[in-house]
Image 1: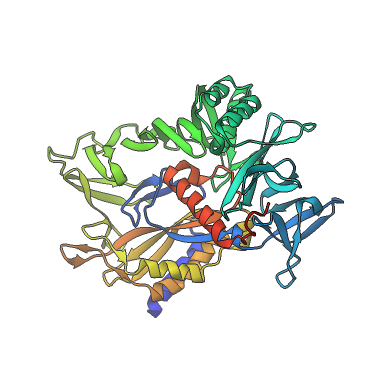
Image 2: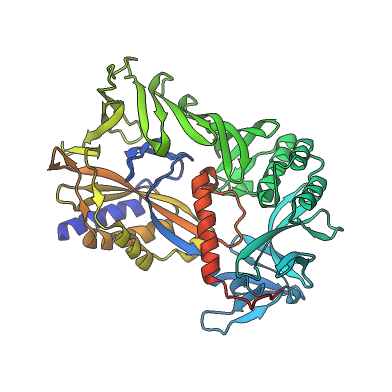
Length: 534
């Protein structure tokens, strides 16, 4: 065990002090815990069925921030918004007594990267339906498009269920107006607000959208304006949309717009094209047709075909432009290989879909062998520096014996870094685990990090993980083998008022799960108001 810990410490040191922690999308060819193949690059369609999670709920905790009093004086401390009484809770420090600040007593507040303003004329829910609030309210500033400022207001209704309303201020001189409930009223107001976009106006009048679709409407309206002006959409390293180009890592260029179909091309900050394809919605992202993914040299590396936002077919290419693999994607992500070509353009599969190939992973330098049976990937392996065979996929993959216990341990031991919360740092960390024949994890390496704080939090935890948690080793023909597995860790921040486009929005299932978790957290952590209180 001492030897194991020494190896781990060395590995951790390398990871932190010079080991290549991926800052872009190039990571190498691997297979994750769910047997999902990562073909060299961390693309937006990465959807692990099982991941370990580090979750922070903003609804449950005070966070560092500032608020402005009615005189414009900035006050720093710990803040939390209460949906039950629609007031800001404030403490100077952890030991300080909590006090309530109403919107009438403030000019707004800032928590992390989110700004909350004071708005009026908000429609709030009551026992007998919606009514205009008789006081000022706090609402998140979510978007400014063509001089119109949009806000998101959240509160707890009379039944104890959280709800949201969207508010717009069309100009500096206009009043705040809440988008109303009810099909007729909503159509009229939305058609007026977005009336200078003929396509969007027609779709609203035809009933394509309702009140719950306002975030998507705003995005479509904004992106069409950007397209008309020839401007780009910018994203930070966590794939969150940002309005600050100087803090961006990626950007998207809207190439064309046909009705509701936006053809966009996505680039790294140094103008290397990553992918392009058609979106019909942006909250969440709804994909349709062929998406092309590119090698850094500009050649197409993958074509992924979507139907009704689900991937159905794919073609992978060698870096020289020749076809490598052709396959169908069935329900639940099962891959059925139709054709597999080697570098000499010879199909290695026979009529039954059996065969094998060896290919070079140009990112890691490994020569990997794939063996196919009945059009499925049966096994994948490579030879390590010691000449030992290491599997990526086998008959019976290595598994964590008690994954629920491991998740519980992470919840207890791993604290979401404070600065990462403030910066809204979130996403996947991918860990390479080498599980040997005894079930011991003999090597752990970070192949895709998030930031130094989150990476260190996981690495610090892993010393405990390797001594307390054991795996069932992978087996081939009943014999234990050495296996390399990628373990995904999902760092996620559940915000009560989150609007920004982020990495979850690319995957509808993830987006829905996050919205569900967000609502559950709000129900659990909001103080209950007396029945009928408005």
